Image 1: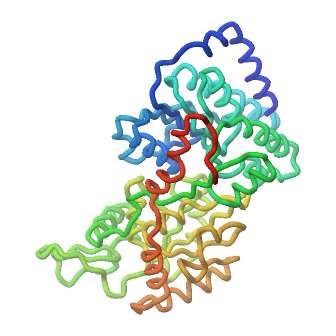
Image 2: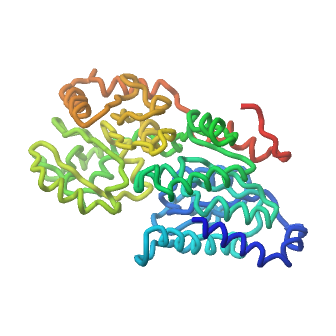
Length: 437
């Protein structure tokens, strides 16, 4: 890690003869932003939303990150947004673990700096997602210094706390990461964060002033019409058996999924009597996650009688449709810092989908127990909540429907409205002075 900082300094010195010439040049730029994700762009919804909002406001946007999952179609079709891929770097299985981290950080730094200086057009702002902050913060600051841009960091969490989950918070590598993140985080011109708790922590312990920009659901997270639900279930049923009909319809012309039935003559879709409840838990270890095979084996060994478990990987356009078709969401996200909120719950609430969420420090900023869902402490409490909620599932005035009603009446702000109120004024404040918050 220290080696990556040294490498950046050496690189800057090597560019010494060009430094002042480069800084003095008047770049032909308009309103432009480079959104940087040191990760899979398709799995970074908040940064995709930033890019779309900036583009709608007339900014030319370069979205820089790793290839992998497919981003939203709206982003791909936007002519103001150009996606620039950077080669993903993996740990080399040679030498001590610390050595592997150092080599990875140095290579990432070189590739990222090359992309920012030589492949990306000059921009007014670099908007960086953190974590991961190593080596992104230092590299983006060097690029901003050389090109006269402003650095904006969007704090989703802390890199050092995520590293601490693996190595323990007393590990020298974690302490070094904390020092780096605090030092380099102060180099930014503007800072955004995801909760008030994180904003207060950044101010108190890091001497960084930030503006809270809560994650809000995009406009496409909403209730899914019954006809669209049926189409989705039939599509998923081709690959995943739990979505297929349990029994044939009395009329062979009718089209059935496990949850819905289509009358081919009237084209009317109805929910099946006695249909199963649909529970959705969006996690990082299913779908394409690295632990999918392990958990798949555990699921097979469980021998469940009245429950079917499916671990699909959904396209970006199908994910909101599934949330809008479900009866309950379960969130197992626990923050490494205790200061960020699960975006999956934000998406669920956008679809007016109640949740059961595991408790952590600032969850109350999003989930209100017995109002828009339930909060649990452990697996036993979750099991009790599921039994209670689904025991009354066939009743129209059940608890789930009450939670759903509360979510509809809350009239939540959408991402675009929230962004216009909180973020856009910062990008148009040319003097770089923070508005009062």
